[in-house]
Image (cartoon, rainbow, N blue to C red):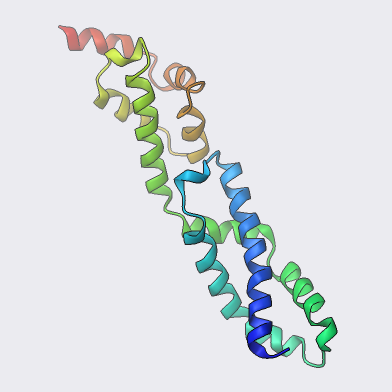
Length: 167
């Protein structure tokens, strides 16, 4: 196997682990796939990590036969790139502020289109949604079933806001 083939196989193995970490991150944070472009996250991490570890891997695999090389690559990637590290890299690559803003917009849209909450001003709901700072929590609320839970926790006085607006 030449160096380009080894780098290609190393990148493929790393990419599979990064993709699994990406999926774990989305699931742990209740983020839907349509909110983030997968390749915009997985590919840069894969390229960076493959470049960073290539020389070390080549040094470690000296004397490895061509037949054993794929197994050596799989073993190296598994030992070097644990999921906790890769989830952290995924988190660094993702624009969490943009996700939070998108989720806030989604939640506010649900609220203003759901009776009786639609009678409160959009700005009120947006301000209330800014109290939630965790992606997972906000994603859980930005769902038709989560709207009522959000109101109970963060906007129990919403009806008073409507009364003030009407006066």
